[in-house]
Amino acid sequence: MFPRTHPRRSLKWRLTLCLALCLALGGGLSLSAGAAQSGLAYLGEELKALQADPFANPGLLWVDRGTALWQADPAPGVPACASCHGAPESLRALIPTLPRWNPATQRLENLEGLIRQCQSERQHQPPAPYESEALLALTTRLAQGARGLPLSDAIAPEAAPALARGEAFFRERRGQLGLSCADCHERYAGARLRGDRVSEGMINGFPIYRLTWQTLGSRHRMFRWCNEAVRAEPYPFGAEPYLELELFLRHRGAGLPLETPAVRR
Ligand code: HEC
Ligand code: HEC
Image (spheres, rainbow, N blue to C red):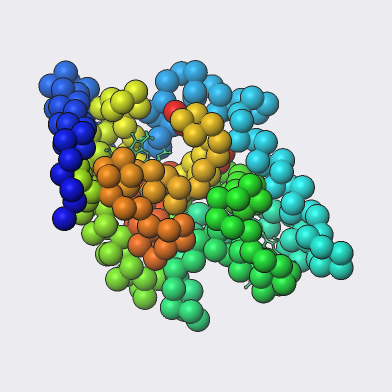
């Protein structure tokens, strides 16, 4: 199906070799047998300190931008988020339960989707595009308001098939490298891969400030990045398979405290 060109094959070999070496060197400390651990546990001391720093954490820039956007009228005569919702913290309890099942639409909805829906239905504005600075800022501000709350395991019975599809996606081998999410984030959790220490692939820190990106990114940006890392075709932002994956990852990481904005390598 894929043109098996020489450079790609050699890349596959390099990665396979790297993974094999990591294991051989005893770097592959699979921690998946115990309780779920945040990506924070896999960071070096410096990045841990940066995340905890109330002034230097670079993600706080988006928190401030989010506060400003929350309070501003998007256009003359159009009410701000704040004028209907009050403080961002009023939505605190919602955040750890996302994505959630909407019985009216029979679909999953995540935080980005809910914000965009309010922008179009309540403010009658064009919704901020995925991964735009505005949507990242609002998402970060709302999630930061829920810092410390544990990811919820509450899942509507109607969402059971979506949860099962999310788990199947997580365990399915994909891309030219034929690796599943579980291969890297369960089997090789703790191993070093091209400068990164592979974590358990948890979502409690998002949006995260990633040094590799030199900016903040959403959960779906991370999924796209991880898909591309194995040479698989990524899905569009907000796509159903990514919402299902997000649901499964919430379930898988239930109990982990939200730590937005997290800092990652
Ligand atoms: C080739 C190995 C590999 C595969 C396969 C892979 N990832 Fe990742 N993933 C990484 C690396 C490397 C990072 C960055 C280091 C880290 O945080 O683990 C990462 C980071 C993440 C993070 C961020 C963790 C945090 O604490 O910020 C999430 C979430 C994630 N991956 C989810 C997935 C999902 C879902 C899949 C399957 C679609 C997947 N990954 C497949 C290598 C992989
Ligand atoms: C004109 C009033 C109004 C404005 C302005 C508004 N919203 Fe809403 N929003 C609502 C209403 C009403 C709901 C539905 C509440 C419910 O179902 O409990 C809602 C729901 C939400 C939800 C889901 C809450 C939940 O518990 O289900 C989020 C998140 C949200 N809005 C974010 C925003 C953001 C971000 C903005 C600004 C970009 C915004 N809203 C602007 C009225 C508004």
